[in-house]
Length: 406
Image 1 (cartoon, rainbow, N blue to C red):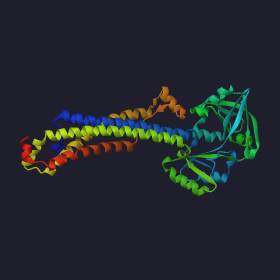
Image 2: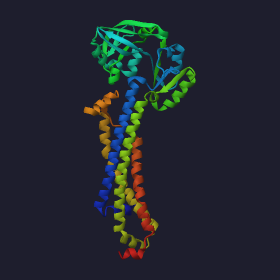
Image 3: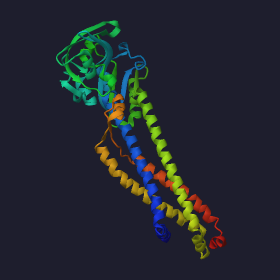
Image 4: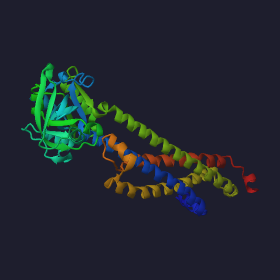
């Protein structure tokens, strides 16, 4: 216990040196936590929006559908399949959809659109589509009314109460044609989707495409997303891999995942450079401290202190300085992370447009996770311990006579 007390007193004999070293560590851990919090918050927000906006955690299709998204690669929606999926452990919600392309027309304007037939109630539970309706009303489970995305409605000159003509090819080449009243206009954050989406209830879409009781995809959300691999394996075993394909959300959104990995890699490089700079700064302080105290070390050894004990005290001194700076950094960063986790930052300008182009609301929430906080604290303390190699080596090889004459 006396060694700990001695080490603590030693570091405050030169307050300026101690405070400068602790300040560099404080700045490193503070900036590292903010960067990682921003990075993780953006990552988690993108995942949550991707899942909630359309895909779900998992999707089930006919085998080969994802490579050839044709309506002929649809599957039959029956009670046995739905029961099989709903009774799978960890499955929360299921949303059946029938999706295919069609040609839309209103007056003299025509445009290719993505038609999505869905169960209005289940769709709203997953994607909160009703909240995105900016004019008119949400889908009716029994009517033929449709929702048209805002960009598409603007291009076609549509408003609520107008009629949209849809032409296309249905199941097994059957002609598909129909007139549908526009019930509402919906705003979709993604510009690409906002310029081409038409929603209708599932029954109306099946009638339009002559695809009775058929769907192209079944979106599944989970109670515990961390167990997605286990759930995928369970669903594959239950449905059979020869007839159906069961895909995770990240397998369907490869471009988004590549962007996330690029951003994550860039953030880690910034943190690594920051730690490298701080590491050299701490090492320089350690060299200066060791050389300044060489005579002191010689006196202590000459009066009977063992070199190993002296080296241990030096390590304790650096750990105390490291812990002081680290704890101060964590304490300073935590209120900022908590505040912006509750009240995300609103972005503007080019940054906001970049987010919108990915279909993400331009918000930047900060994440709070014990994992990256602990990992950054450990990283800093490891750097501090590595810088202790020099004073330990210097102490063990100390020549008492030479040190006393310095």
